[in-house]
Image 1 (cartoon, helix red, strand yellow):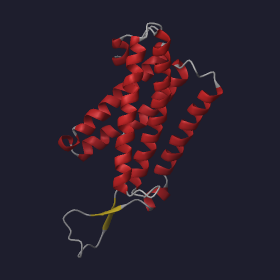
Image 2 (cartoon, rainbow, N blue to C red):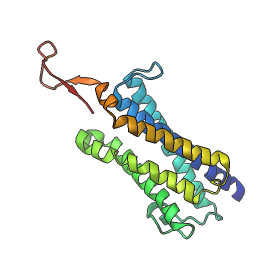
Image 3 (cartoon, one colour):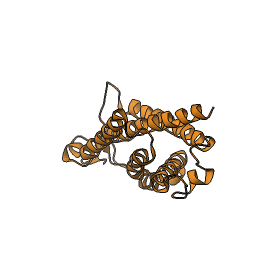
Image 4 (cartoon, rainbow, N blue to C red):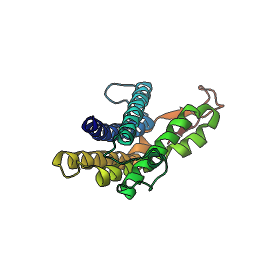
Length: 197
C-alpha cells in the first residue's frame, strides 16, 4: 500500500504542475479577450475554471497521499505551515506556500462578488508567485527530477508560462486586448473606449 501512495503522490504532483501551467496560461489568454481554438471568451473562462478545479483536486490528492504515506514523513502541519517539514524543509515549504496561495485563490474566487473586482484582482495576482514556488518545490523535493522526462516537464512548463507572461507584459497584448464600453455611457453616444488590461 505504501508504494501505491508513493506513486499516487508523485503522479498527482506532476499532473498538478501541468494543470497549473495550463491554468496560468488560460488566465492570461482569457484576460486578453482573444478567441483561441475557436472558443469565445466565455468558453475560455469556463475552460480556465474547469482546469483550475482539476488542478485543485489533483493538488489535494497529492497532499493527502504525501501525508498518508509514512515514507514521505510529511505531517498535516507541514502541509499548512511552510518550512517545518523534516524532509527537505525549504523545498517542501515552497510547496506548502503554493498550497496556501491556491487556497487563498479558491477562497477569494468563491467570494468574488463580496470582495469586489479590485480586491479579487489584487489577490489573484498571487498566482504569478504560486507557479514558481510549485516549480521549485517539484525540482527540489521531487524524486523524479533526475529523469530526463521530469526535467523536460519542468523546463517546458516554465518556458510556457514565461512566454505567456512575456506576451502579457508586451505592447502586442495591450494593443489587441478586448475593449469594453465605459460604464455610464450609452452605446450610441460613446466617444471613448476603455481598454481593460
